[in-house]
Amino acid sequence: MYPRTMPGAALLLDRHYNSLAPYRKGEANMYAVRKHETCTIKYVETVDRHLILRPHNPSYPIEVITMEGSRKPGDYIVGRVCYVGTDT
View 1 (cartoon, rainbow, N blue to C red):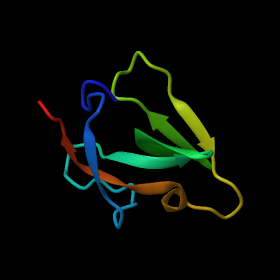
View 2: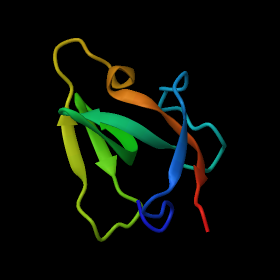
View 3: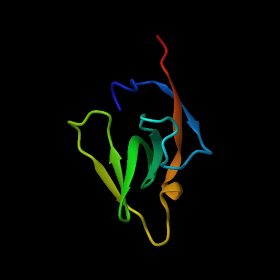
């Protein structure tokens, strides 16, 4: 998610906010998302039964996760990134 987050940055997650509704008007949310056996930080949107994971830099590829069964986006979202801290 460079340049929005830097290597070694500390992220604070709001684990109670797993909705895809914008937290602030006109600003996209970054989310921690469960992906297989790990977690990734991306912008998230849905199309049909798929989660589209977008990086900050549009020159990088998007990732797609197919939602299984009756699972909803909130079942994959760990939380909204509400703070990014870097040690200088």
